[in-house]
Amino acid sequence: MSFTAAVLTLYPEMFPGPLGTSLAGRALAEGKWALDAVQIRDFAADRHRSVDDTPAGGGAGMVMRADVLATALDATAARHPALPILAMTPRGAPLAQARVRRLADGPGALILCGRFEGIDQRLFDARAIEEVSIGDYILSGGEMAALTLLDACIRLLPGVMGAASSGDDESFETGLLEYPHYTRPTTWEGRTIPQVLRSGDHARIDAWRKAEAETITRLRRPDLWERHGGAPGRSPSGARHEDGTKS
Ligand code: SAM
Image (tube, rainbow, N blue to C red; front, top):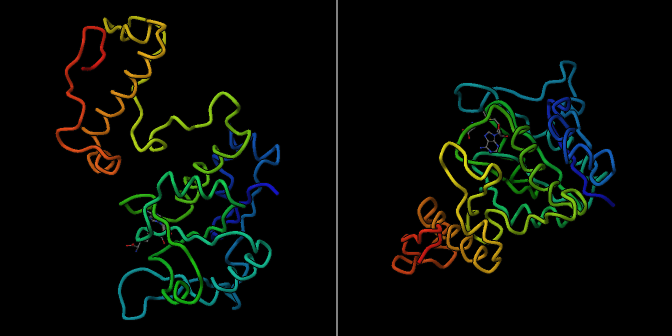
């Protein structure tokens, strides 16, 4: 069984969207993952096929109805009983690479995309739904957030990135941000690729990359650095040798 993305949305035409191109698109065509984009409105019971209503207690905007969403969710979950149920919401747990890895290792995800002001709280109270956020900003809907989550998962599926890269060395996988990359030309606008990377000495290159990753993480993401086990005083000195390596 391939990784399955079942997406509940008011805009199924947004899927696969960008995931229909490049690595993810090829993987979809090859059956390495499958997509089931479900129109929530198809589960509305009334003549107007309404999926939302005004907020209880007043206020701006509209709220997605629990009854319609539950019908859509239950029908979709019945077709995909193995999938964990996620909802993209700004108040959800911030998405991180560890969660992406676990999802990619599993059967897929059933993802509920919100719109308007959000979803009637009773749906979350009545169903086991994991709320996931992709960051501290507000999108107009959960679809872009779902596409982001799915892209992060799909590239990790077996055979999608190819044998050359497992993604193991990338930012967050090691608990650190990644070291800087360079490629030809050797000199560009007077800037030269650090000598160590041209030395062919793989032990020195590995040590340089590790030191760079540690310094970048310490300076840019002290929160990650601390979680990684870095402590003030224990961090790389920042002093550089001529070839760009650190003390
Ligand atoms: N009223 C909500 C609030 O203040 O938290 C924002 C609703 S937003 C306009 C509409 C939908 O977009 C949400 O229900 C959610 O599905 C999605 N969304 C917006 N920002 C998101 C984020 N940072 N992460 C995940 N989903 C998000």
